[in-house]
Image (cartoon, rainbow, N blue to C red; front, side):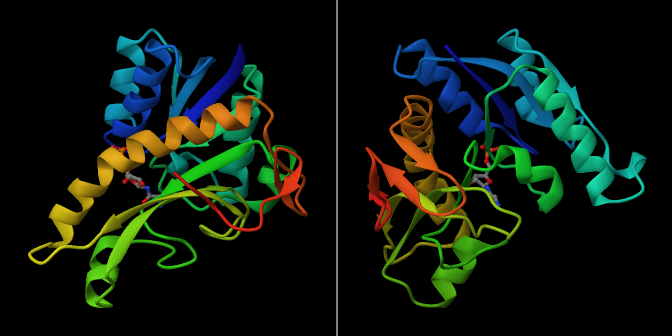
Amino acid sequence: PAKVAVLASGRGSNLAAMLDARERGELPVEFVLVGSDKASAGALRLAEAANIPTLALDPRGYPDRRAFDLDLFQRIAASGADWLVLAGFMRILDGEALKPWVGRIINIHPSLLPKYRGLHTHRRALEAGDREHGASVHFVTAELDGGPVIAQAYLPIEAGDDEQLLAQRLLPLEHRLLPTVLALLVSGRLQWDGQAARFDGQPLASPLRL
Ligand code: GAR
């Protein structure tokens, strides 16, 4: 099966969703590494419990972003991973370090990109008075939350939603979206060469709605 590494900075519920999808036979991958920039990340504990090798690297031990990212990506390559999933990895990545991975890294972001790149997406959607919110999975580039969007899940905003509630209601949608896109990616149906994203050989004109 396809070899997948995951990077996560926090709780790891999206990692858990991928592990569950794999258990159910819906995601034919082998998780070869779970890495984090935070030794305390819940995602690392989940990986340990699932007998997946883990890696905790502290950015403070490096002179700059590029040095950290080059070491991180070199270790990911050494794990044998063909694909890399960012599942709540809260760092911007260096463009040079990313180059060998173009088309092989995806990220989940809690907004309907291109809206609300960066942080506090739920609050910003509420403040803007949006009627709908959602999550996106996109190919990763050096531009923060900027690569081609592959697929999105939509969530109507309801009266009474606050930041926390909206985040909580969005999460189950994320948990379906990410394993679904990863399965498409490792199947070869989704491709991106740095120029045009394709799905089943056709240009991906707009994000899949999942
Ligand atoms: C998720 O909501 C994910 O979309 C978001 O962090 C959360 C991680 O939760 N990612 C970003 O904000 C990326 N910029 P998890 O650790 O429970 O998977």
